[in-house]
Length: 253
Image (tube, rainbow, N blue to C red; front, side, top):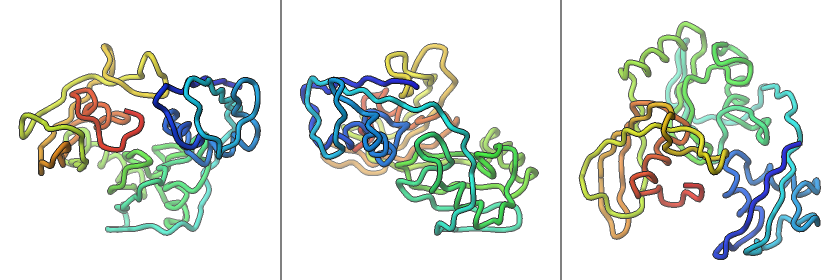
């Protein structure tokens, strides 16, 4: 069993389960609530309640059970399908939906819905947990995801992502006012040395390139379009925070 210890900063406030979810991007709020109900979240050795208010200066301990084997199974979850043929489908993933099963999110994911919709006819390149998944987006990001129904389509789509003939473009609101109208962030991304649950720009990280364009300017915020040249975990969130303009509402970066 792994233990995480989180210290509430002087300015932290709000419901404890919401605060914990903001500190642990790999765990959903519902997963943390389950851990609280099991008595696996404590403060000073005493179990906490999910409705408790976070107490600044207090240290909260989360005991994570050892990982259990995850099996992706079909689930009848509605999908917003914008295109489909014999080889692939394009799904508009809503905010809050996890792409594939993982610890803390064993079901209710896009993969579970795809397995049901496609009757299991998905490419196997991504393995048993990620069938058909060619690329991913964050749980709290909405947008289009392409899923491959067979290995041939999966390989061709991956090649297009690699040679940039298939583009991934996202729009977001960032804090502050970017001085230029367009720009590029070329900075390697890897695990944050200070917090292994986060990503960061680090020496020796994987090559990461984000091209951005300001679409609209408003007081205190800019509406920005970002085009990915690479696809690293949390890339846009990390890169925009790195240049001093984190995404509005992002509680992690």
